[in-house]
Length: 204
Image 1 (cartoon, rainbow, N blue to C red):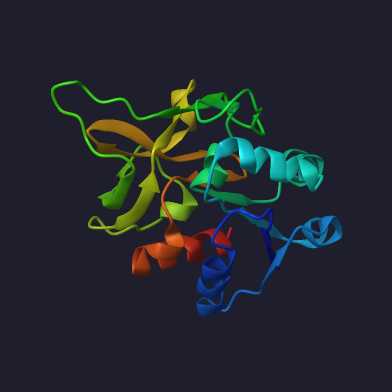
Image 2: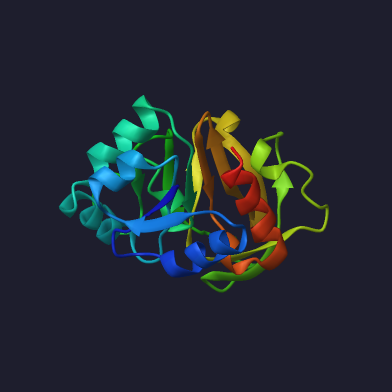
């Protein structure tokens, strides 16, 4: 069973529909017992960093996520804002502390003055894979994923970067370490490529 963590921010229904297409059982929940019973977790996210942190803390989810992910080491996939929550902090908002699973910060895109680009970065983009990982096994060379974001993750350890993309500047599109995987894009909006990635995550 895959638990899609419900903290009031994210396309949980779309993710569950994609898992259903893959024949995977899932539940959308913020119940601690259900999260403890899950084999894998997905942390979605759409919205602002500070509000997301507040929602997690109001529901008491920080401790149970630490328990399952850091202590029991079950696989987790963070999507968009969900991936950003894996970092220590964000320039979006105030001083709210993220989950801190990666030595990384979330920062707003800054472009050269002579070549500014519109924000948010919205649309299809290709990945430049940095290293092998099971969720990217046999990924087609033409694989494209759908992004919607104004902030991006800046890792302090290059070995945590799984894939990059480019929007004016190179940015981190995926991070991974041990049982933790983050995707800045939306697999649930990325058609067959997103379906393939979700299938590989479900098989971890």
